[in-house]
Image 1: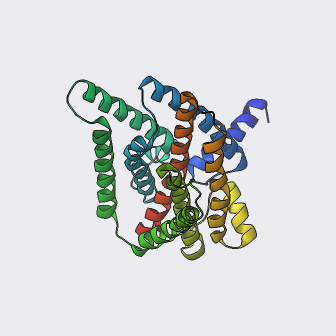
Image 2 (image 1 turned 60 degrees about the horizontal axis):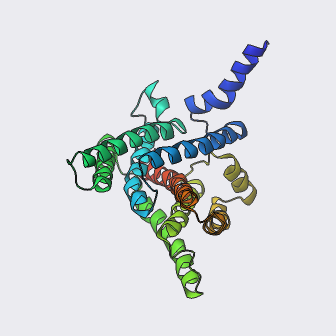
Length: 282
């Protein structure tokens, strides 16, 4: 086998086939996507600075509907509502690229409409567009299938939210202000929802974890419930480090806000996709 054939085989084995056949992640593409994510954060940071946008709580709220949009599109792919080659666009991670491009375009359009005097509040209009889009996607899912396990939505929400509230009130009781910040508590909530959906899906619904490290830990523990303490052990220190170790200048604060938003997306997107997949039985 020549170098070109070996390289082609490597690319297909570790990158193309996992997307084409929805095989999940492997150590090679996991590291690659992580490196690309770091570059994308840098690009987004530059774009937001150019648009004079800060990834604060108000902007985070406006972005949340687009997380639901991406997740519902992913569930539509799970439900085989798209056919090849279009279906490959809606697998992970290509769907993140798609949502990034579309969201940035809609963001720019909203800002320009605001500057032209057509809309009063661009953040509200931007958020409404995302809400309408997500509702359309949910409508398509409802019309194309049925609610197989609707109770899962409540179970995952109550489990993730309940654990989050416990930590919120415990930290408040001891006078620690880490979770007084709305973005910080949303980070923990998003990832506990993700952990809860994984726990319910893997342990009770015969679903499978596709990420490398979680799969290893679940196999070692013998239960996906390990994801709940794992998320807590990881993200409480992450939030603490972000709040205490960044410089206090404006640029550093902007970057910190963006990193927090990305962390929320990385938790809430799979949590929503996992939960809706179980609800619709796909």
